[in-house]
Length: 277
Image (cartoon, rainbow, N blue to C red; front, top):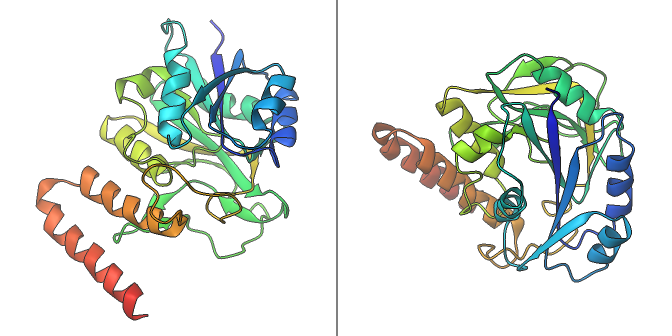
């Protein structure tokens, strides 16, 4: 039986990027079996663009986060009948290269232990700017890509290899594992949900891959404050503050009990260093 793929496009005031994203999904060499867009109360023309592209859409409250949006889409699907059913997650500011889905599926073929695979992520405007080839986490909770600032892509990190996690922008996730783990932690409305989910995949005995043959171009609109961050948990609509709060949450939630005092000290020490510096 061939792989079944549902593309889930999460939308939040994404009209600036959606035309390119929708066109990129439609031009895939291996098209998704179905595509569902979840709009989180957009105030711009996002819904009009989705409707014009004849993509099935769901609307939820503006304050809901990415994990809730994905869960709403998955809840509309018929029961899974195969271990080879996948969820392809896309942000409204992430445009996949035309071979992205085909390359992601190739990486997991005949590898039942792989629960999630992600692409190489390059900049939206400067498409030689290397943003991510998988992600990990530092001892103080900082999100770590292993890349230099403004590093350019010259193939120096190319390959297919295991990582702690991958960005949700372009991630392909085995549906059965997604449901077994309960999806994304909905306390992480935005930021760090990817690290947390990858961590839980490994704890469940599964693996996460990056395949750099697959490429996604990402504008990182929320992190760079090119749009308002207004999920329910966002403090003063500031992405950096929300990211730091979620970093601490992920560390404390996923660490073993005997590590908690040390991690708490690391988090406090990091906060003091930022305040002084």
